[in-house]
Length: 130
Image (cartoon, rainbow, N blue to C red; front, top):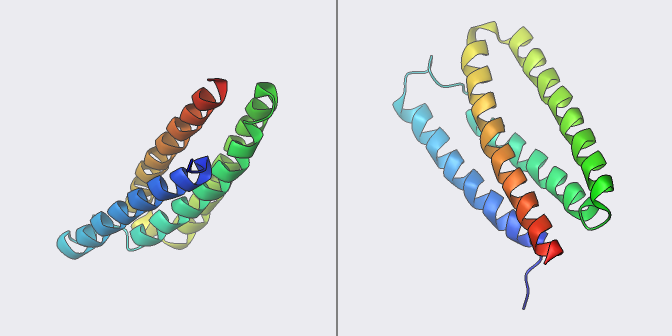
């Protein structure tokens, strides 16, 4: 039976999030508190949810015309970046002592999840063309 693209992405992103959560918890236990943001496990959950929602929307739009997918991708990425910037600004404004560590961990998770999203969308696009 052929598994759906969304299901494969769900498995991939869930395993990634589980591994990152374990690493985050180990880092919180092992490292001094000034080097690890206490919000790190919540950041993993946050990016997990954002990635799932965006992939669902974009994977449906990729099945239509490529130009329509491109419009959705640019719009979704722009809204995502503005939303993430808003989250960073709110957190930094309310937690100045944790700002640098929070921003660094947030950025690292953003890069990791964005790579997985883009690679999965490219894989989906190649499979639809063949």
